[in-house]
Amino acid sequence: MNSPSRSDAVLRTISAGRVYGKGGARVVALDAVSLDFPRGSFTAVMGASGSGKSTLLHCASGLDTLTEGSVLLDGVDLATLSEERLTLLRRERVGFVFQQFNLLPALTAAQNVALPRRLAGHRPRRAEIMAVLDRVGLADRAAHRPTELSGGQQQRVALARALATRPEVLFADEPTGALDRAAGRVVLGLLRELVDVAGQTVVMVTHDPLAASYADGVVFLADGRVAAELRGADASGIAEQLTRLETAAEGAKQAGSPAGSEPTWREGSR
Image (cartoon, rainbow, N blue to C red):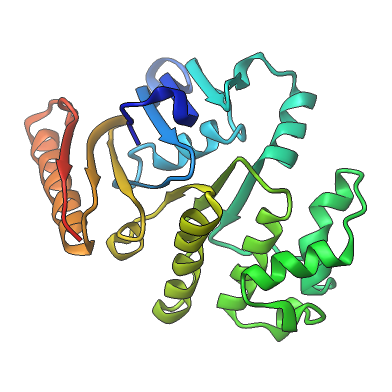
């Protein structure tokens, strides 16, 4: 989310651009996106399918590379890192939670949480693993395998796994997409608590206005550009903004012109 104080931005994208393909197959997924994500903030990223929201998350987290522009993570320009150093950065300073839980079925919850640290050459103490499981309310399920856990519990294990490295930024891509509403609320409440209590920075891609309402602010993308930003809004206000952008995009498509316009910023009310 754009912020008046750039010095406090743990994550910045500067004129970030990402192009796939060439010639007639050329697709502009990101187009000069500049955003600041303050430390200890919770930002939701929304937009229609193909708007660039997942591309933004992948490039900002180092899973993909920009065609132009920069991504700065705590002052480090990701484009200057070798593939080896970029891999280390993702392991040690970035956390990921995806729609699919990606837990290994043969491992217990505790073993799944510890796995990334072990792959990085560390030997995490059991007390550390139990502490992070306790943060997501699953210390009593440490010895259970994924098939013995509900979908919501599995996602909380995935969240604990992401937190085990104490990441600078936690990236969540549709973290409630595979959950029912009740389990989704639990996961979203945990993300909100991580920000409010632990000062974690969270960037979440979602299509759900209710999920986005847990965030401090929402960035809306259209055609790879920042189309609007909304702060402090409830689910209905977020849904209204999303509908407005989708209507504008459809009108522009019928008129045969780009849907992008100057970004707007609005203050919402919870």
